[in-house]
Image 1 (cartoon, rainbow, N blue to C red):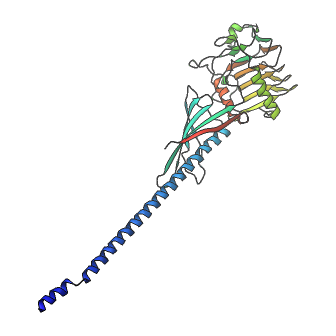
Image 2 (cartoon, rainbow, N blue to C red; image 1 turned 60 degrees about the vertical axis):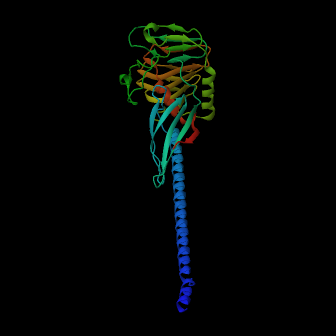
Image 3 (tube, helix red, strand yellow; image 1 turned 90 degrees about the horizontal axis):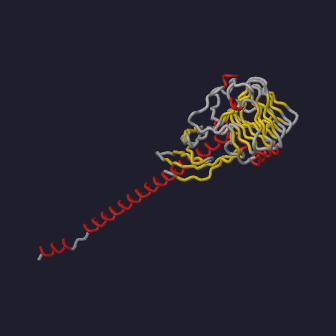
Length: 361
């Protein structure tokens, strides 16, 4: 009887079950706690990575704006169809992280693209592809070494055969030394780039002297449509808004120089940009003179001289019923795509803006 009661007391004892349940509850709480900690830690990492990704994106955007600011304020050799890539190097301000060198690629005339990468902590990185457009008030391209858009065009060439070409539409590079003088400014025409006409007019010109020996291009001389309105609009904008100065610009900082009515600019030295010889003004080349860009003769404005003068780019005449260009001295007018391309760095006449961008990586 006693033994039977003992066995019943053991079977009815529930103290061990309470301990088991307690341990199970503790295990569940530990698992829940661990899961919560893991979830919070993962979320914090995700948030931190997202934050640094945004920092990298903002840095990339800052880099894009830095490149555009550089293009607006510095002389830049832009890529072309024949040389479709150029490296641009900018500075990175303190507190930002982006690559300081980008490759700008040619897309179409006046349109370019480049990629900028910004970085953040934890190896965060974002790359933006930016598309930019450069608009210019300067008429695109040139029609020849000399383009006479007004009426009654006439050119007086030297009589003798010596001295080489005075008007040459073959593409000449600008001198390596922008401060050269005399014969040191001479360069050799490209044999790979296409030649422009030597003389472009809108009506048959009167040519005197030995133009066979002093006129070259592809073709030497041609007729075409007038672009006088385009150049008149350019000149009027410059004069109306006062976008000119009385001194010559440089290759690094090309500028617009005005020779007003009744004023003579003695052409000795070097310069780059646009010279406007207004109605009644004169550009007298009496010494060593080397200029790169456009020379625009308006009305009776004229260029002449007996010094050693090379003008690389294009000479334009507008607003005349009759116009004589006197090349009986030692003035050489050479077409140069280099010189004309550098006009994109006259910031007052050009605008650079971002048209689109996309997140690449």
